Length: 340
Image (cartoon, rainbow, N blue to C red; front, side, top):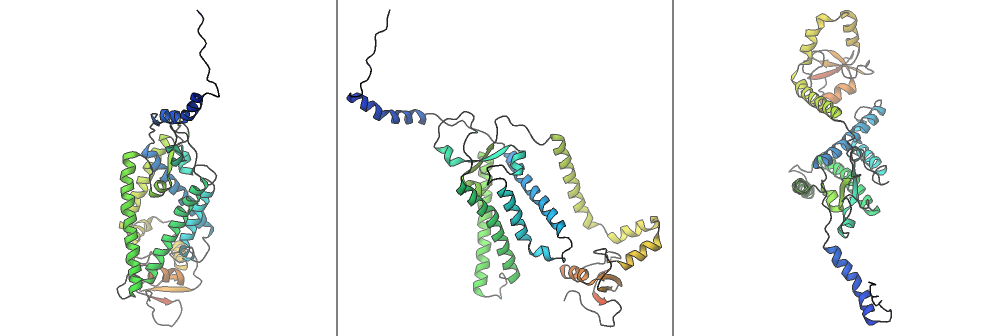
C-alpha cells in the first residue's frame, strides 16, 4: 500500500515562517534538558602536579645557584625574589603560554581548560573536551603567579628591613604594616576556604584558578600514569629519610663526632696541618686571615663575620667553642666584637 504524500511546506506559507521562527527556540529548549556529563578529576593528582611543579622550580634554582657559586657570598641572596620570578616566568612561557601543560601537569596527564566556555555548552561526549585558556587568561595567570608573588615577597622584605612593625616608627609606616598583615590574613583565610571547597567539589585548587575559571582536566580519557609506583615509593622513602636526617643533625655535636673518629684517621699530622691552614667554613686558604677567640682557629674575614652576624651564639666548627671575638692574624690590634 503506497504511503500518501504529505504536503510539503511552501515557502510562501504563513505557517512555514512561524516554523522557522520557533525552530531555534525549540532547539534551545531541547538542549536545556541535557546536562553535562559529570567528570571526576582526582584531587590527589592535582596536588601532586602542583608539588612536582615546585620541585621542578627548585631543581632549576639549584642549577642557577651553582653557576653563581663563585660570586661574593650573600650577593645572590639579595636577588632571590628576582631569581624565583625569572624561573616561574620561564615555566609559564614554555608551558601555559604555548598551550602546553606544566611539567607537573604533564606527568599527571592534566591540562587547563576554560570553564567559562563550557558553561554555555550542552552535553559532551566524554566531559574532557573544551578549549584551552584564552590569551587574556594566560596573561592574567602570569601576572598573578609571577608578578603577584614577586611583588608580595619584595614588599614583605622591604617592610621588614625598614622595621615598619616597630612601635617607634612613624604612624604611616605602622598603619602600612598593619594593612599588610591584614591582607595576608585575609588571603590565608580565603585560601583555606577555597581548599575546603576544592576538597568537596574537586575543582579549582587555588584562588587564582577559581578567579580565572581555569580548571584542570585530564588531557586524554585513557590516562596512563607517567610515574611508576616503584619510583614513587622510592621517592617517598628518600624524602622521609632526608627529613629524619634534617631533624637529627642539629641535635648532634660535630666536634664530639670528630673526636670519636679522630683515632681512626690515617694521617693525623698532614690532616691537622691542612685544617689549620684552611678556613673551616669555605675550606679555602684565607686571603684576609682572622682568628676566632678564644679558640685561635683561623678563618676568612668575610666567612667569620657573616656567620657571627647571622648567629650571635656561633660556635667554631672545629672545636665547638663559642666565638666571642675576632682578631686579625699576626696583627697587634685589639679584639673585635664580631656581632658589631
